Length: 178
Image 1 (spheres, rainbow, N blue to C red):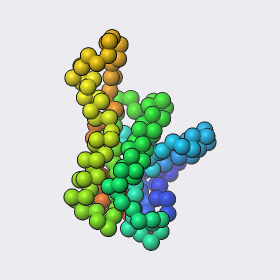
Image 2 (tube, rainbow, N blue to C red; image 1 turned 120 degrees about the vertical axis):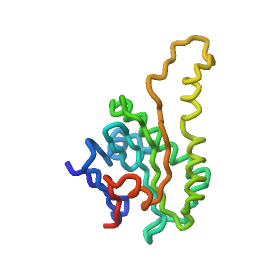
Image 3 (cartoon, rainbow, N blue to C red; image 1 turned 90 degrees about the vertical axis):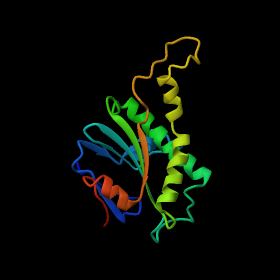
Image 4 (cartoon, rainbow, N blue to C red; image 1 turned 180 degrees about the vertical axis):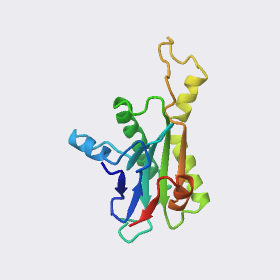
């Protein structure tokens, strides 16, 4: 099965051929199950030690649907939901065991300089389960019993990258215009 996937407009492709496993099918799986309100990341790729949940948004091409503000609360909430709901499925499918989970948001935007990308990253950090997993690591006794044990981290890191930065950081998975 090919591990070369396309963006929703079929203007860009990403090549995960060098990965042990990758998929772009979460959307299809959710819809087939009638979970049309669930949000999913565009791609999931497994490396030797990580599971990357990758969301891609390119607001710089003519087919972009609307004026996109990546710092709008509604947009940030939806991006975070994509991580959570994809992660739930992958955990149930046992694709996340013993792998570090990283959320990567590839964002192309006319104002997408490093300052704006860092602002988006910081906003996503506040919406993702970093603080919750830190409570488990600190062993805070917020529950009356100690039957809750976090077996692994829900998330190791979040990155917000331009296409150029993605290609620099992940050269084994090139993202390019078709």
